[in-house]
Amino acid sequence: MANIVAIVGRPNVGKSTLFNRLTESRKAIVDDFSGVTRDRHYETAEWIGKKFTVIDTGGFVHGSDDIFEEAIRDQVHIAIEEASVIVFMVDVTTGITDLDDEIADLLRRSSKPVYVVANKVDHAKLHHDSAEFYAFGLGEIYNISSATGSGTGELLDAVVSHFPEQEEEEENALPKITIVGRPNVGKSSLTNALLGVDRNIVTDIAGTTRDSIRIHYNQFGNEFLLIDTAGLRRKSKVNEDIEFYSVMRTIKALEDSDVVILMLDANDGIEAQDINIFHLAEKNKKGIMIVVNKWDTIEKDHKTAKEFEAKIREKIAPFSDVPIIFTSVTEKQRIFKVVETAMEVYKNKTKKISTSKLNDVMLQIIENYPPPSTKGKYIKIKYATQLPGRSPMFAFFCNLPQYIKDPYKRFVENKLRDNFDFKGVPIQIFFRQK
Ligand code: GDP
Ligand code: GDP
Image 1 (tube, rainbow, N blue to C red):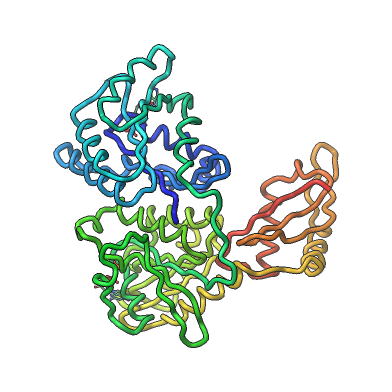
Image 2 (spheres, rainbow, N blue to C red):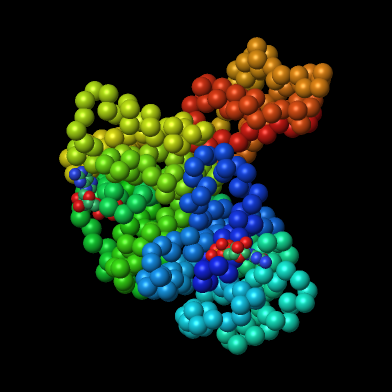
């Protein structure tokens, strides 16, 4: 079950300021991935050990004034349907506006937990002013200042109380694979091609409250569960064309899977939204592969695929060690290659390297290229071991872990990748005191 917190409210109340604050610890990392931060409206966050995804719904509202309010209403409807918890933000300095009232009306009719947050309570004096928001009939008011962060702790305590203590580990479960991507890239076509039927599952799932359905695939020696959200057709077809809606669906599917197949349309290449999804998968430590579909529609020569691939790798850097496959679902080209590759990525993700083998290989490399000495001190890495976990994690024990810099960490990661094949899998490396 995905934990999704949607921040809703009219423009300028401070939604994106709160969003940035909640996802702050991650922001520094994300900023390294040049160019994508600005259109980032969803991001992982963590509070008292519980992970969740925060969505700034305001980031999805585009357009002129006349369609503006309608867009906000759509956003709120979708948030009610898809989010696990809703944060309804209002501005204490302006008080209640008509649009606030309208949003409150929609939220009152929902069964999802709603937290009314009075923002811009920068001084104790303003605490009393927020009392007027009780008029919404949505319960307690949380006074916060997104600018300073005051009050956000209490809000988060309340919000994460809705999330389970820990994801239950599914021992010996089948690999879970999800196809994600923008509308019309060919996700359902691929699902149908794999299953060999043009399924219409609308009727099967009427009234279901599940986020997605799992289709058991077992052919040619490959067995896995295909997580299908594209197949979950909605009551209102309109929703599906809304970017915000597809992002919500994607996040849910992604959190529930082991390997994510990010599908692109060869005519569009990789766009900002795809890159955001890619990084979200990376940060959630999911296996990842990229499928460039509709390859039949591209005019090409012997260099086209190579150039296309290079461009994608440049845009997803620094984590670019992922498989990229060019398909035509309609012409049935390389469809089974997709399945095989997804299974390889899964194998890489669950791979365990023995401590002796790891040390044989890595200690030799480290001896030849030791970490640079810092402040006249020599760093001695003594041994390494893979830590238990659902994705590859390695600990390198050394005398002065605090002096190991990022470039050396990256060097070690690259050597691990060169020697042990972790294609498609994010790996974590820790340097620890010994
Ligand atoms: P959004 O449109 O709801 O995402 O609102 P923004 O996050 O863009 O904020 C709108 C304006 O309110 C910006 O100028 C922010 O700097 C300001 N703002 C946001 N939070 C606070 C706050 O806690 N106190 C004060 N005084 N200003 C804030
Ligand atoms: P989804 O929204 O991502 O599930 O996309 P669909 O599977 O519904 O496909 C959207 C459209 O693209 C449909 O008209 C498909 O027939 C078409 N399509 C899917 N894959 C290919 C392909 O490899 N080549 C071409 N030319 N069209 C494709």
